Length: 99
Image (cartoon, rainbow, N blue to C red; front, top):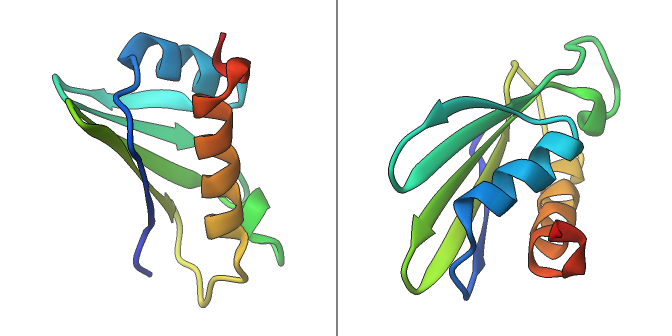
C-alpha cells in the first residue's frame, strides 16, 4: 500500500518534531541529516487502521517539510485512517502543541 503524504510549507525543527512525536508514541528508527524515520507500535490483527503499527518518514528541506505515513504491516486496504492521522500529526507539528 502506498504511503500517504503531506507537505508543510515551512521548515520545521528536527529536534522539536522528534520530541513531539515521542510524546505521541513514535520512536526513532533511522536518523539521518535531512530525514528521520519513526515507528509506532500496534497490532496487526485489527479492524481499525489507527491500531496498526505505523512508519512515519519526515524529509526536512529549507522551503518545507514533507511527511509520509504508511502502515508498518500488511494491510488489505486503507479505511481513510492514514490520511486522518497524517493530518493530525501535521496539525500538531505546526501548532503550539509542538512546544
